[in-house]
Image 1 (cartoon, rainbow, N blue to C red):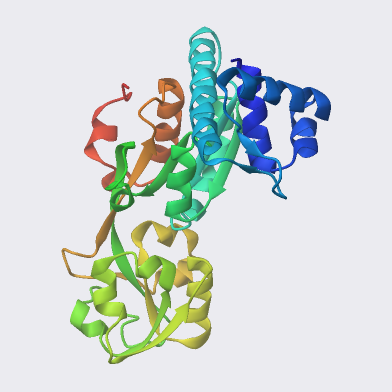
Image 2 (image 1 turned 180 degrees about the horizontal axis):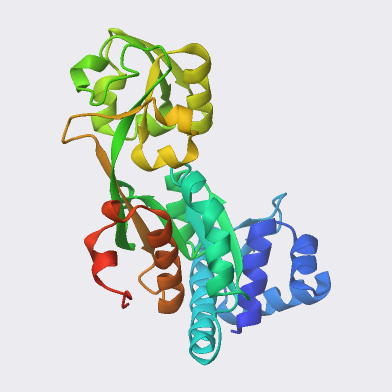
Length: 310
């Protein structure tokens, strides 16, 4: 069994097509097919059901491919770790972010990473938390930035990055627009705009957003920016993470107000696999976060220690 054989079966699994997989691997279709056939003969297992269109892995083939992905990931990590000790950080960083943090972090990440690791190829993925977690567990991503609560049922390692409040965002002219502090019971009437995929994720928010006395307008898919635009255009209010004020204009920030409740907050973490070895890369990402997020929101761990040790 060779790394090349493992790379070929992973490529076929991704494309579900031998010709496309061969093109991606830079070999002929016959070379790829014969190499995979030799592996199947060696381990006495049929990895792909070639009668299906598109091609599908067999039940045992799926397990072999999953393990192959882990082996290839660890091999890449080992090479990168050795290289990082010799030279600048090289290779690639595949970093996932949930949509509620990406608009705040992503615009500034490129500049910081280009300063710290100019030869690094960075790929940022903005996806829902369940997608990011699954991709990380399959070694398709190196790290992800998600809500801490999303990691409870996983075996991933994590580092707390920051904790922030949820804020009321009210349209100009709304009764709560000029309030310095808002109590939860004051948000039980009027028109509330809700990004369902985001707000339903937090119990403390659903206690407000699902009140029968509210006129609810749901955005089933989209972004918090779209939600803000809806509030500005139609009136009413919504609830946003505190750091999202960095995506607002000075005029819009006038409509952001804290909610006087100890329950209205969330924590955000950086998660990675237990076998992740690139300590220097991890610290470069954390350093970038420390330069973007206000210091008063950062976790004590990343402010207390200059470098995180794996």
